[in-house]
Length: 288
Image 1: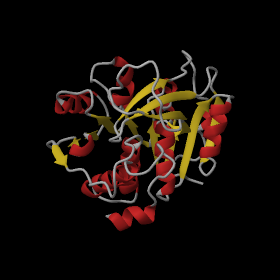
Image 2 (image 1 turned 180 degrees about the vertical axis):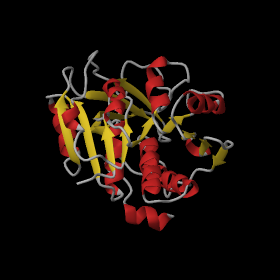
Image 3 (image 1 turned 120 degrees about the vertical axis):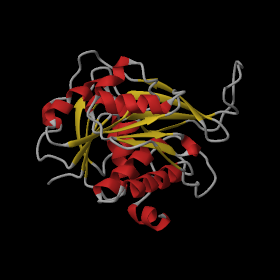
Image 4 (image 1 turned 135 degrees about the vertical axis):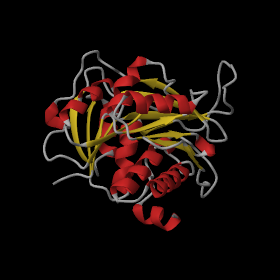
């Protein structure tokens, strides 16, 4: 079977802690609501989001032989997955979520220098598209996908850290957040000038997103209003990516893909859990 989307890397477990305020004021002890472990990290979010939208999705990653790895396997049981063993264990994040849904993430990548993703985990019939998470081993997968359109999400890249450059300059479609940028346009133009990208999308939360295509000017798009109260912004960016990829792989133009991504991201802000309740294809098209 040919998959619509291959997602490489980026599954883990999020431990969500709801706190009274962000930044969290110092105290010896804060009493909080129940602390919950959930499927997390960007690759899992994109894979679950794409699958919920009806895209034929495959996921390849390294996870630990540990309880967190077992949670990942259970949560992704409805997706065609290929897992290898991560020597240092499964990635972890502790998410501090404030009353307004904003979050601070404490990320433990469990990285092992030189660790590679075996080609057997992502070989086979070529997918229509591959989305590569910025796990270190994913950078080596670009060479194993000749002729396949690719995307990546640089998240809160500051435009300087060299770790991200392989991803920024080798993917055809690049997503990033404006969170660490004072001048997003300059970084977006650098990505286009220095690499293979035809499109760069910079998300700005409630302010929508910026899009820069090769040979065109910078365009600003508004955010979709959340369909209900904002309870948790975790996973909104991954939902946006899923909705955008759905739009493009279904043959829609850029404007429609941005709209679908924005709707998926807005939905994610209104549900509990990082990635457990992605918007479905029917709900997305109804909201459109």
